[in-house]
Length: 287
Length: 156
Image 1 (spheres, chains in turn yellow, brown):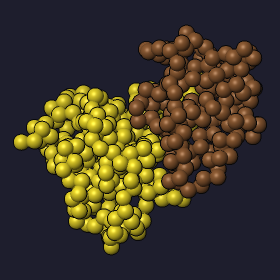
Image 2 (tube, rainbow over the protein chains, first blue to last red; image 1 turned 45 degrees about the vertical axis):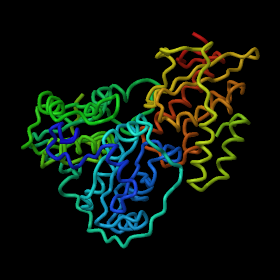
Image 3 (cartoon, chains in turn orange, red; image 1 turned 120 degrees about the horizontal axis):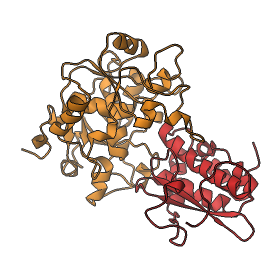
Image 4 (cartoon, one colour; image 1 turned 60 degrees about the vertical axis):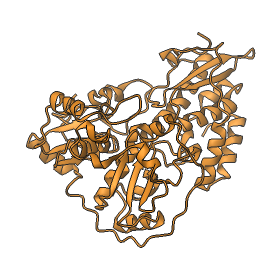
């Protein structure tokens, strides 16, 4: 049993270790993808052979607020030389925050041959594993993506309103200061992109990074995660859960934890999140 | 837009000449390589929370050190080892604003970060970087005697 398997996750196969990645650097069936919050990091050195996916440039529609469509996703996959048989291994900075976001977007298009490198960039660097500044080029693929499916893992504002009406569980993964609305009102503080502060009524506050060990960015054990999400936030695996943050990036990390590590079958990420909810006219807000 | 300090404008003009994303990123990384942490005569760890940039998740700190002519030298620390953008901006602010007229520094707009990094910044990242610009401007405003609720400028 591997160390990751010993942590008791429902789906341990979705994580790979840094050692596993180091042994698959030359594997043609694997494409390693770095996705960061800091747009300069990839250029300072990345896992040899890794390509970069930048969330604003590569995953978003460049005009309206939405993700790329299936044609855009196909074009991205072709450019990166990814086929439907390629297993994509994501990693990145900030405890894999942006890596899980890219992972979640890939699931909208049904590319389920995907994994996260446990510990992300910080663990790779801590172990003094090699970094390269060479940007790899791979032969273009002929990827044909299915249409994006927004039904299963994505929630829109009307669905969140319905969920609220039905008293369904919500998890707000932002910081406590954002959750209370305090942060929006601090003097000389850059605003949060929302006119109102607070949270969606009834949402429990579980900051996303509680799911990782701060020293090396690895995910906490299933028992520790259950203590947080089930013991403190009172979730149950049978729940229909909606998670949100500011624009849906941090909450994709929590979506990943609940869906794959704890095996919750019904978790949706509300990517409109607080930048939508905090600007909507007339919706209920709690502080 | 108010007049920017001349040295800062030079750096921004240089960046404007590099529209290619990959080349600009490399230029910004090269700039980050020149980052020098705040000298011990100004501050030692643990740094005062008064000098911590609000909203910057890379844990950036800013200090102002008064020159004989009354202007300020700006010093920085970035505690996140992966905070490359914060280090790059710190170098740009230090080289572009240290010794500049306080009124000009106080008027530097926060959206300078978009001219440096482009629009491909997450909201969290842009907030943190704008917080660095804002803190430097606030220090200059405070040092010039204007009101502004500034953090302490100078060795502590």
